[in-house]
Every structure is written in structure tokens, then in C-alpha cells.
Length: 173
Image (cartoon, rainbow, N blue to C red):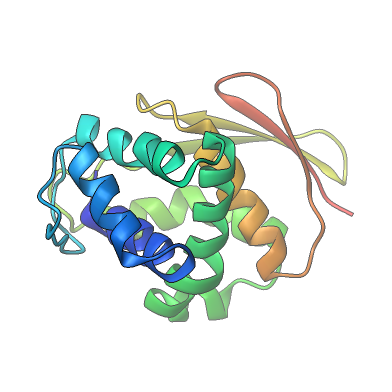
């Protein structure tokens, strides 16, 4: 997984919980407590997943909350700062969500070894969208957190229901 994900996780944990907690999460995940991540670094997937899992354990919060907190931080703090040009082009939560597959293709086209998730969309009426998450990582709960973050960013209350390990249904107001 790309280092930008872990850099964001680090920022989130340090800003909301503290630097000592982040060092403990790193240590329990097999990293040195002083580990730094560059944005384009390739990071071992098992260690990356361990970071998310250990974040929940160290902070004593449910894994789903870690994913929601990360999604909120990624969209509303980190990515909106790093990718501000992209954020300025998208005008609604629906447009943002529908554009993510193309954004992943565009942003990662020049990044060696990038394997972003892919998305397929099925419209089920004017307000309902079923998103199929395609990735071997199985991080559908992270996608849900990100989608909630998108709703917050645009001030759009989204109803998000996990249908299975690959699909979510998003209802727009």
C-alpha cells in the first residue's frame, strides 16, 4: 500500500490521540517507533493492515470507528489539503463518489506498483447508488468511512448500508 495512506493515519492518530499512541501502534505493528513514511513509498500490505488493526487496539476503539475516523480525516483534512485541485473540481458528494474510480486511475497512473481499489456503480433510482468495491485487500469498511467523509465534506447526509463484503448502498437526500 502507498505511504500516503499511512502518513494520513499517522497525522490522524497524532492529532487526535497523541504522538506516544502512534509510536506504540508502530511498535506493535512491526515498525520502529520512529518510522517515517514517504507519500509514494510501497509499504508491506500485512504491516499496513496491522497498523489499522493495532490502531483500534491501542486506542481501545472499535475497528469500524478507526475506519470512519480515518475516512473523515482523509477527506476533510488530509486529501483536501494534498489534492486541493481535485477537490475544487467536484461539486457534490454524488459526483465525488462516482468520480473516484477515474481519479484513482489518473492519480496512480504514474506511481509504480500502485494497486488502488476499483469501483463499479449501479444506479437504483435517482437517489440510490450501489457501489461494488473491487480490491483483494477487503477494506470495504474503509471505503464506507471515506464515503461518510465525502458526505460530511459536501454537507450531504448520506445513508450508507453495507450489503456484503464487496458492496455498499448509498442513498442521497
